[in-house]
Length: 194
Image (cartoon, helix red, strand yellow):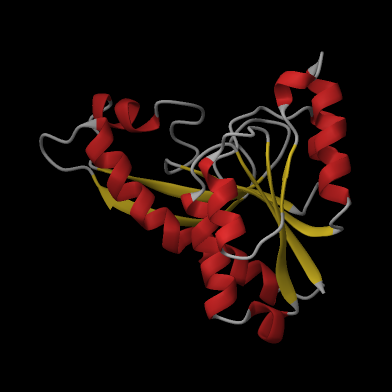
């Protein structure tokens, strides 16, 4: 069985989209894959309750309890490794990971980013796209590498930037696309030969 562990920091809407797709499309039966756990660095993350409501095990590794980024990453890795992940899916995880952590999960960690990478890595993507005069924006699922938001692109979804768009309005349209994009990208990975 291929275990998928989803890592979150907030509300967990992308996590929920992945879990619902896995359940509705019977990934266990069709792909030999299951959502093994949802792990958060924030004990108050709304996505934890969402995951539990969907029947998924949850765990918290509060980053505030560690003296260094490396110490936190070691504890997070220990939590992930308890579930023997074939795939780690970062879904709204708002921490920069150390190179050692990224190397540990090389080739089996993915992330979703709210821009059409390589454009606008990092934060404030929607504001930056509007300010740059972009006619389209979107989201990207990519493999995680040590360079922030620069890993190989797996899937993208394009969203038009409308006249008079605000960052919040654009973000809402992009997020709606993310909910279809991320499960689709993971499904494609599950079809790849081991």
